[in-house]
Length: 96
Image (cartoon, rainbow, N blue to C red):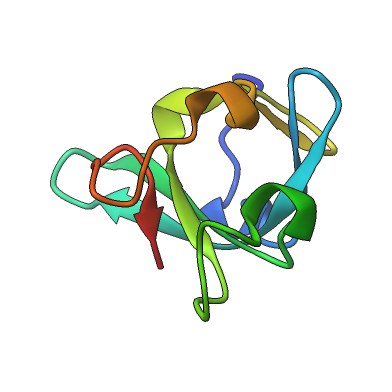
């Protein structure tokens, strides 16, 4: 995050926006690589329905790779999600 160690749980509840300022969702959980002690993904819920209504069907969230994260502060900024969305059979977007 900003160089100061923080609890991973501090991410939960933060809003996520694309770097273009589009609301994407809210962090509900994090995906961890325990062996390497790194966050590998963010589980988002309360999604922007305009972005996801045709992509997730009955599912209630998405998992985005942590490598998409651009900045973490009061909110989390990720790469422009609209340009990065893949079809469901591609592994970049995993439905939770």
